[in-house]
Amino acid sequence: MIVLKNANLIQFYPPKINYNVDVVIENEIIIDIGKDIGCNYQADKILNLDNKFISTGLVCSHNHFYSALARGIIADIKPSNDFVSILNNLWWRLDRALDEKSLYYSGLIGALESIKAGTTSVLDHNASPSFITGSLSTLKKAFETAGLRGILAYEITDRNGIDGMREGVKESIEFAENIENDKRGKDTKYLVETAIGAHAPFTLSNNSLEQISHAIKISNRGLHIHVSEDETDSSFSNQQFGKDVLKRLDDFSLLNNKSIIVHGVYLTENDINILNEKDSFLIHNPRSNMNNGVGYMNNLHKVKNVGIGTDGIGSNMFEEIKFGFFKNSDSKGKLTMDDFLKFLQNGNTLLERYFDKKFGKIEKGYIADIVIYDYIPPTNLVDENLAGHFIFGFSSRDVETVIINGSIVYENRKFPFEINSIYSEARTVA
Image (cartoon, rainbow, N blue to C red; front, side, top):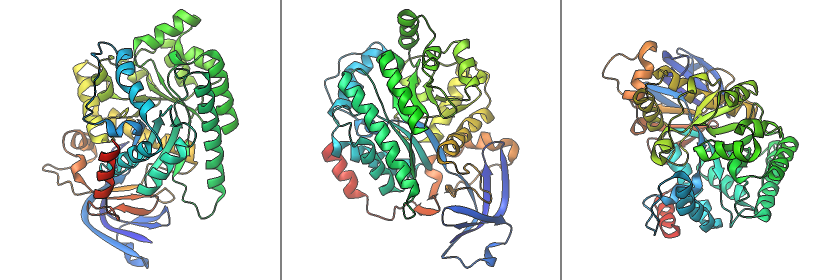
């Protein structure tokens, strides 16, 4: 049992702060919350927070840990003047180079750096065409070593041939079966879930979509896929199939309330209507979109469920939220600062739909994924200006301690294991 004493609780959306309360955690669940209640419990560990701020863990709703070791890459990369050239000249070369060891260390470094930034859950989208079978289990091992929660998916695609596509489908189905076995095991911490991944509609034939649909149906999971990140995807769907891109996916029964639709920069009004009717999620990745020069999704305010991801640019959700709000302002968008906190909060709804547990609040009965900050506000911090403090004040540097699934995985800015050797090995692998 862990007791957090004298904490100031932050709820992202609706914005609310509850001052000077105690939080009691048993196993992975918050079992009590209130003023001065900690003394009623025999705790194994007591953290007196002296009115430090705490929040639920941050959720990165789309990431690519396989790119974690690409930072500062030195390679002969041809000039890339459009998005498809960027894929061909950089990312599709990188993912083909991954083997089991490099994928593991990419995942482990990604997980450690997520936790350091206060991100307790990552929805990861993997591509390693030279190492497909076993790739999701390798990433699962990395997540569990660090103590990070995740929803993992393998990026099924036709771009490496029909055999690679089939192997991706097989890996996805078998990993989902393994997760079901884990859920039945009493001694297994349930930290990792899975979605059925796919690269993007423009790299998938109708036959491939049929096989992905089968995988979704038998696994009872959702699709995790890039859609309309660039104009190429939407124009391909219309030119080749005479349909808007989400209509094409929906015709194969690929969309449900667990679907993770990423980017959506060029979705049509009809696409957005389908997305909302299916109660699916659109994941906005502002820094990646700017980095790749693909444009801006000006219709986010029309989408029912929006989450925030990084698309492989780390897992620092403070930075992602800041850039998202600034880009919205620069584009004369209609979103407010509170909207971006809502998008961040929405990642917890995805967790609830996959894990079938309660996430996203520091209340009785909720999963104890919690971040403790040493942020000192220079102005009063109240419900009405929480978003302003989060966007213009809070940063990953303020993350002091992280609790995931009721376990302290990062305390006083230190992991419970030595990490220098991990980083050293990662540099060697890279």
